Amino acid sequence: MAYTACAADVVANIQQDCASPIVGGYTGRAVLFALDQNPVFVQDGTNPRIISSITLPNSGKFVAVDNAFMATAMADSATQSNADGGDIRFAKAVSFVVPERGAAASKDIIEPLTRNGLGFGMVLEKKDRKGDGSFEIVGFQQGLKANADGVVRNEAENNGATKVTMSCTESFYEVAFLDTDYATTKAAFDAMLANTY
Figure 1 (tube, rainbow, N blue to C red):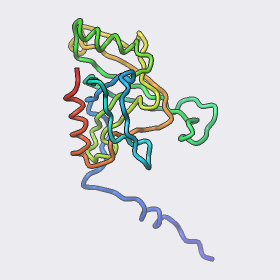
Figure 2: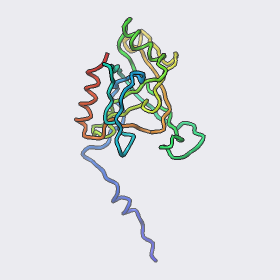
Figure 3: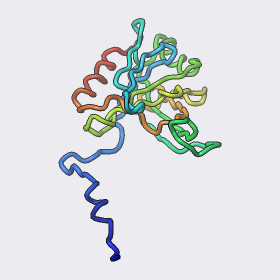
């Protein structure tokens, strides 16, 4: 039997959208929410890595943050197994700037970042404009937490805003907010921004 290369079959299964290529990186815009507000998440029925809505009960509010960026890396794991089983973990670190200042921001935003036992969730806007994957949720499985040295304000930098670094470890590599067209997803994100401190 003659050898037949499978390259043609592989190439046939790769779809490219040259008119609208994937764009990497974050815009810096994000919303943060405390998990002790008991947010209600609606997960997709076929893929639990897609969240179709986040509702904060009891008039809960989001916190708008600037310059938000995230890095993800493989974390240590005792068992390299099925990620849905929770054995493989990914370490996620998020840094962002909280532009608010003053006593109200101190009491309602900055201080809770280090005191909330359950941690926080965050929705980050990406530069991509496709809908699926254009907005990423971090802190869904394990809340983002900051320690005291992760909250810094230097009046000579960031216009005196507070820079925060938080981290968590989750079994899902990426969790997307909505899996639909970009306009619908952006409208849902903008509604969160309209409900911020």
